[in-house]
Image (cartoon, rainbow, N blue to C red):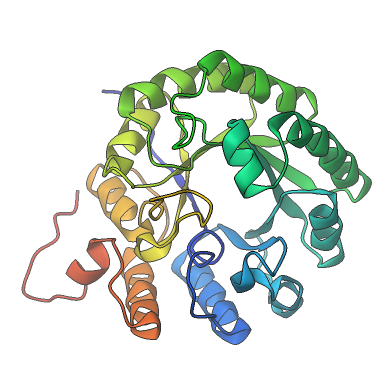
Length: 306
C-alpha cells in the first residue's frame, strides 16, 4: 500500500462543529480556542460561516470574531459563504480565504440554502465573481457528494460535471463533502481519484462525517488515491441542522492518532487538541463522539506510536 508521507488537517470545529450546538459559545472563548489550535500546529482553520444568524445563531458573531483574530503568519483563516452577501461580508471582515460551497443534491440545497440546485449554480458563479473582485482565495466545494438522506445516491456523472464547472470558474482548490456520512471506502476511492485527475495541480480536500462509523476507513481509502487534505472537528463535533440524523465530523485527535501510528506526518500536537476537546466537553456538559481525547488524558495506558 503506497501512502503519502504527510497530510494536512483543516480544523472546522469552530464552524461545522459548533453550528448545531444550542448553547452559544462566547466570542472570546472561540478566539481562545483558535489560539490553542494554532499553538498546537494547525495551519488551516475554518473560523466561522457568514450565514443568516436567525437560522444559525452560533455564527451570529462572525464579523466580531474575525475582527478579534490575532493572525499568525503561515496559518489560513477561512470562512464558509453560501451566497454573494456572505462573500461580501467575508471580504469586509478581512478574511483572505473563503469556502464557497453548494450541494450536489437538489433536495438538500433547498433545505440547506433555500434554493434549487440550478439556482445554487448561478449563485456560485456570482460568488466567484465577487471573490475575484476582492482578490480572495477560493475553496470551491460540493456537499452531499456521496449520498443524500432525501434523494439517496447522487449520480457520479453529475458530481463530476459540477466539479468541472467549479474548476472552470477558476476555484483555487476543491472540497468534496460527505455531508450525510453515507460514503464508503470504495466510493471515496472511485470519486476521489477522478476528481484528483480533473483538478490537476489544485488541492482536493475531503470533508467527512462519521454518521455511519466509516469516517477513518474513508480517510484510508482517500490516502491510497493521493488525497492528503482532510477537514476535521475537535472531539468529533458537528452535524447539519438541515439533515436528519446527521452526526459530527471525524474527530481531529482520532485522525491525528491514526496518521501518527501510520507514520504520516501532520506537525500537530495531538495532546493539545485532545485537551481542547475536553475543555469544550466541560463547557457543554456532555460527552463528544470522538474517542482519543478521553484516552490521551489517561496515564495508565499506552498509546501505540509508530
